[in-house]
Image 1: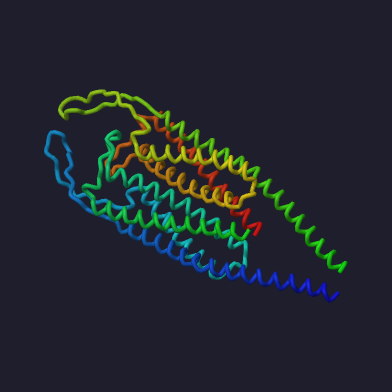
Image 2: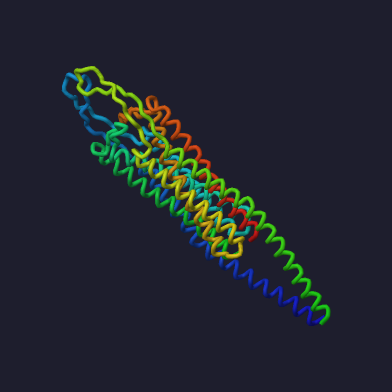
Length: 197
Length: 197
């Protein structure tokens, strides 16, 4: 009987050690997980603000009547003129809000509730899809703004609205990094789960 | 000592049962995992083919000299005129190729090699980012083609190139479903790992 108890205690002791190691690993993971979340939220916020303050007025020569010379007209470009930019803004605001909420949940949860941890990683994945689609959409229109298209007869606008395009591109790059951080979060979580399993 | 062996056998027996259940679960997972991979590969292929056969010639009234009446000119719209469409095509070809390779690897691996399983899920995530960005980019230009933009003076083209736009939209919707299937694959893998852990 004595030897049985010893075996039993050994199993419990071993179990405790494994649990301690697991908890230590989780805490280590939580550390960079939290930093990445805060970075992603901050970058999304900066991208949204940089876009939301994007506005430029330039004087453009407009031909009103073909037989008369062109007239110089002041034209103002605003970020919310394009539905793609509105989508980009909304996507980054959602990503920023989620980044803050998930940081708080990560801190509060500390891996005790498996359901919360699962929900967080699922929404991280949703952010990857949301941000990559908005970055893709804005890149497509940005490229068209810089280069235009002769087939569609869409003229480039960035030669006139240079500051507007540059600020938009800056927002795009910042959001691109934010989406990569969310991608990294999902990637690390997958690697972490695969290592544990 | 006898009782000790009994305890030991019990543990081994229990371990075997758990392993059997785990293997059964894995096989069950492999089933729908494989079906989803084949579906994603097929949809990406269809999307790429539908786009690659997209071409339309329409007669457009073009004003060559402002003082003379417009001249009717046949204009041909081809899918590879736009860099966004080329990106969409390449992304779908990559997704299709990867879908086929990962299906073969999934069949061959049968969850025995953890490294291969990890690589597959990482590349599933890469496909989510790739396809969502290409669908986002093409949606932005598609919307512009249907609606145009008065601020940028980009005229809508889908009122003239109706068949071309419709076929492009069809490819877009099919690729959208393919990207959702890759999203689902990553989601199911995460849920599966969370359940196991």
